[in-house]
Image (cartoon, rainbow, N blue to C red; front, top):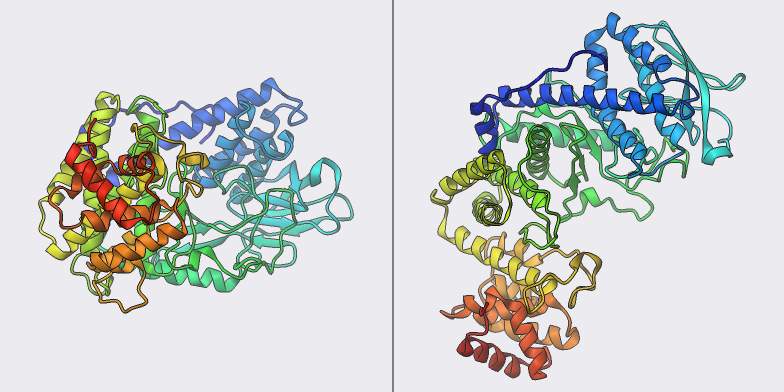
Amino acid sequence: MTSDEPYERFRMPGRLFDELAEGGGSAEAVAFLLRSERTRRLLLLRELLARLDEQPDVLGGPAASIWRYVEEAALRAPDAVEALLLSPQAGSWLAHMLRRLHGTASGPPLWADAGQLAALALVACVRSGTDADLRVPALAGSVNLPTLGLMLLPGPTEKGDNGARWVPAVVRDRRVTVGPAGRTVTVRPLEDERGAHWLPLRTLRAGPGGPPIWLDDLDPYRDLDEPVGPAPLEAAETRAWQTLLDEAVEILRPSGPEPGRLRPEEISRIVPWRPAPRLLETSPDVTHDPAGPGGTDAGTTPGVRLSASTGDAFGSMMIARPPGALDLAETLVHEFQHSKLGALLHLFPLLGDNRDECHYAPWRPDPRHLPGLLHGAYAFTGVAGFWRERLGDKEADPTGLAPFQFALRRLQTRLVVRTLATRAVLTPQGRRLVSGLAATLDDWLREPVAPEAVARARAAAVSHRVEWRLRNIAADGTPVGARDGSGDGSDDAYWQDDRVRLYGLPPVTYGAGASADELLTSGDQAAALPRYAADLRAHPDDPHALAGWLLGWAAGRADGRRLLARPERFRAALTTAGIAPGDAEGMRETAGSLLRRGGANRP
């Protein structure tokens, strides 16, 4: 694989597109996406080399003098070099580098970012057994070897250029020697264990005999933003990841093409989501505490679910270590959905790039643009399918979450697909994909689920939407800038609806000390209302308490849904009438008056 080889032209078979459009995808369909990503990677490499040749001062000479080592290595070990250039590490760096040259990204000195080309060439030579003499960038006292690990140089970090500098690098017989005279470090990256000057990149196994998955805590381009410094995991944390992954792989069996299923071997990299220093802020610490200075790890905090991915690195995902294997299995499905859609978007334009952030996404606290809505719909179709596969699986789901989660996600995702079908400017391929998702979800909505789970899922969906509108929508129906906290009552734009979590739990009877949310979600609306009113008297601008009061008041009323459809008008009516939030009698009168006048849902 070299930048100047002829790239493959693609025509995706309709049956493979339809598999993906329905939210799933066979091994053949995913393999097609990988082939297309290979061609895209070649085109981007060609573009980067051309741009660097236009600016030879960046690397201190022509890029071709570095790239020739990659080409020579590819002649000796084509599969190894191809795997390197298709790696998520190479993809993330390549995309970042092109954004830097276009002026839309930042990072260390430009030459240090561009110099990672030499680091890639060095690794290609190591993997192929090719000798080389290069210069590579050292950042904060370390040299990154993509897909292999991190070399730590002895002595103090240089102060010039914020700690970035060129250092000589020599490859002989797969042995790497790096550093200036008198301060060199030599390692065998393919053989050496972790030591004072060498941190090999950790890997996980997706089951016995499965391919390795990088657990990447070192690569500077592993983050979704600008480059970050290394944050090495302790051995115990790595073992915890492997245990979770082993259990998640068992949950995901059997694999298949249906939405919600996943072949774990298609995952290429997991990046632990943990606080990491910006690149050049600190030198790596081999004994880094994974819990951080605060002593808690977001990845192990119950209720906190953090994950993300990028179209620049197919099969790679950033995940905060979840508390259990079921959570990890769901997250792997979710993020791989993003990888599949990202690859499809590299092949086909699916919708007009309207980035007005005004649409409701049931899994987000803020208004979303239509491209984000499409990504969410595709990902959560996979999530709904995941929970559908867990129905009745008491071993994987001992607490019985699946009926509620499946009922909730199929309902919420179908709502978003309807928004895409009616509001987005879709291309022919986009219409075909949205129609495929709609067909999948419509079939699922016809499948029987325990009535209690369906009822609680509907209540949870309404709860989130009501509070979302109170936080993000003005009385005239326009967004109020929830992202920057400028909206009505939106001091905390990013919020989590704890009522959704409570609706997902089995119904219980709470005691005297129960919160308003606990009472409401257990069906005791009469007891919940005065608690919400008291919360509003203490915090008049709290949209969560106002949403809870509305939900409790509307419960059991035939006309209550009209008020819940446009809760922002109720809030505006309170202000107009001079009714203080928490004045229970005034709130009841205002709500009743709105319904009698038809103002609750008047266009």
